Image 1 (spheres, one colour):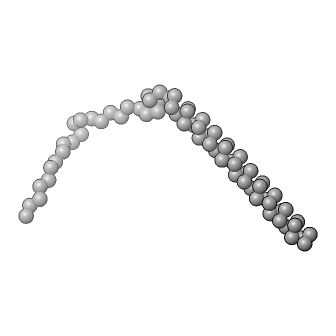
Image 2 (image 1 turned 90 degrees about the vertical axis):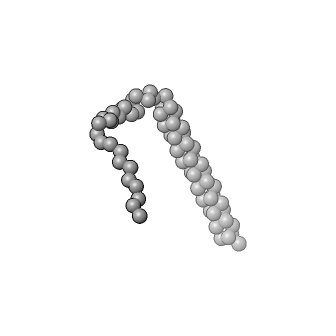
Image 3 (image 1 turned 120 degrees about the vertical axis):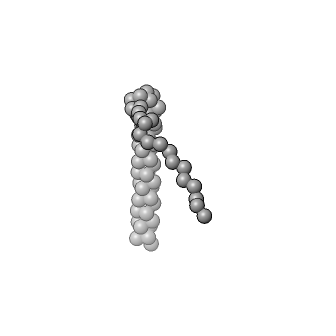
Length: 68
């Protein structure tokens, strides 16, 4: 009986420790993601992407028709 109680106690402690560790990791990841989102939100659009200039004289659009 004493072995069973010891086993049960160990299982409960391990389960509690596992759930506590998972919660701490989740909170850390969530804070990191929140900080990253807030940082991206306040950046100016010009710092994120450079305007892409496409020369309009590169080529022309050709519309193909099916021949039956």
